[in-house]
Amino acid sequence: MITTREIISLLVGRVANTLASDLIKECINLGMRQVSRQDISLSSNLPSFEAGHHFRFNPDGYEEALFEILEKDTLVLQAGYQLALPTSLFFSKAKKRHSQLKKILETHYGAGLPMNIGGIEIINYGNDTTIAYLSRSVVAGTDAITVRVGNRRFWD
Image 1 (cartoon, rainbow, N blue to C red):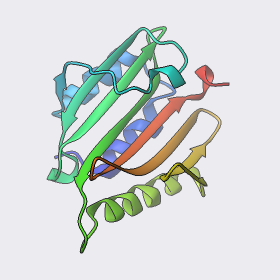
Image 2 (image 1 turned 90 degrees about the vertical axis):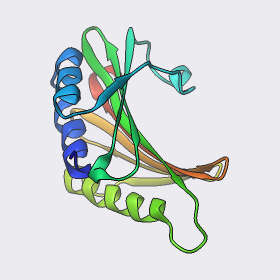
Image 3 (image 1 turned 90 degrees about the horizontal axis):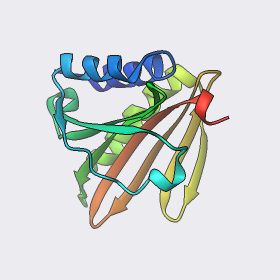
């Protein structure tokens, strides 16, 4: 079982200093299932990249998540994952997961810079080698939580 803490450590620790092919192998070794890449409509906001890779896995043994690696010049441009959780009136799994991810990211980066854009909660993080964000939104009645970590060399 892959834990949320392990995934965040993988993202923060490896995005800036590993080949994309090595991160892909590591995802497979962790038990992630490689699936066909689908464009998730964020490409226009990104630097150009040569390839994208998608995986499915169940963080902490619960809901299925989508993990994405974007490759540029054989390196990792950006990697991250997204959870889609049913919206509930009484108990919000998304709120609990968001809080968990925020705490883990803050152990790596320190306090983030919160924003709210069009109803999407975003917290930005960064250090010398990576930039990251955590977002939470509601799309078609489903809570979506996204964590992405980018290789700073391609963003500066």
